[in-house]
Length: 408
Image 1 (cartoon, rainbow, N blue to C red):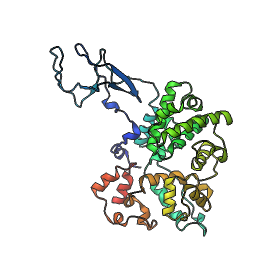
Image 2: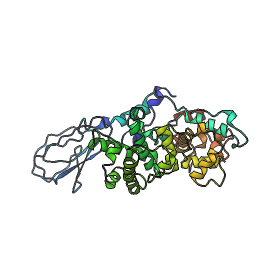
Image 3: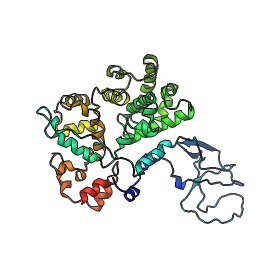
């Protein structure tokens, strides 16, 4: 892992840490309205900051001298402040942010900041495959490829590592899985239901909004089955509006809540047959839910990344044209002890290194070692320029370690 100096230089992904104004720029601005006549101000809350709107969308920039068509009055000149602050003028003082709003609702963001910046945070650790697990029935070099990916994944954190379905409940509420396993299983189910056709970062944002909204309206319950079941599909949809197919998913979630209450004593069922009967839940979600929620390892969760990589490396035949067919072929030769790790391991690799349209082969050891026949040979032969480094640092993870390794 890099030292403290390197970590301090890392570009912070603001979509992960906070969707609102940074703490350093937050301040209170009070404007006295003695002679101004403005339209009525409507206050709306967005996450933990106040956003002010009005019918004519007129903003007043307090850092610029503007001529106002009002009764003349000499105002004392003020020193200009760095950067404009947009406020609404009302008949009372306007406060940009209310300090201490809903204490505890920012713990997920604080946890994410610690995760991203703490030098003491442990690297990703996936168990390497044993060479003896390779046999005549398994694909050529699968152990070498698997172990190379394990080595690469130890050098960066991908979105799946802290915003994936399994890790998301613990990221939002640290140690939820051990403190309240039942609540963790329910949140895991919801995150899985939201995940289809949706990036982890967008899914995470929706889960944070659900956590905050349910905790605000049901402070004694928080984000759990009991509180979620009290919401209508339209109310659920308001929280998850940015995920793919949100209208349909809102209906599925509301129906699934009623089924869990009526048929499963308010908890997640323990069989794949019962889980896939829930609306909007398929085999991939079901196997991941059993693995992470109940510790039951019955199958591999195959998503688009694992499916794509398995096809590229010829781990499956051309007949494995769907995730379910891919799962069956993988399970026919991959030892069961790797069924849990193979999903997050390969998903993170596919999110950051081997991305679908423009894979970053120049910071991947598979092509350099001749293990990936699909590697971009042009990138492998071209030194990593400063412009290329800038582009690589815009990926979905901090790739400092790999850039330094393959630039040497």
